[in-house]
Length: 247
Image (cartoon, rainbow, N blue to C red):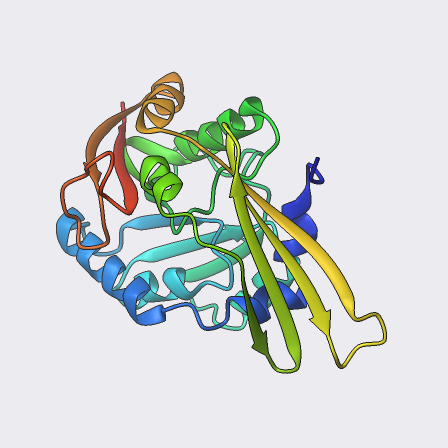
């Protein structure tokens, strides 16, 4: 069984950032632009970016004129993000399972499947509770998650990629409750060349999220199926982007 806290070491690792450094920023920023045009927040709205990583999305939101706070468990990511802090952009190392401000934010975001990592349902419930409590009444939560049924039908085969003399051999599989991705690292420049990490993401359905949010006083308003905010189709949509409102 994978380490129950696999994400603590992996997300803080040099290899994690090396492997994912070429993620498509252009697509990410286009999605945020589309989302903000849809939401139409008032200028200066307060926003919480949960699992913000190095802060690329937080920074984009701040540049649009919003007051943004990013939180992430990874000390390395937050340290890098803090280099971009301004009077309306702040970052904190924080575990989303623990409370963080109460009735403070107009909007909370969780982008690009930055959820579903914990060992138990209670831990995930705690994270949703943190987000719900952080919102003002009438505030909105947007979570961008993989669409389980689509992902089950489009699971990639094994492959190897190499970056800066580091080879990553990626293997993916699934069981009834989780998707797994094993990353075997061979670092040709290091005296300890071999490392092994295993990502694990829960197969949460729309019904699961609806229940988790309702339990914390949030109600689903809209569900989108892609980064253009197209209609959600349980089989054909690559993403499941949920907009919920705090009662």
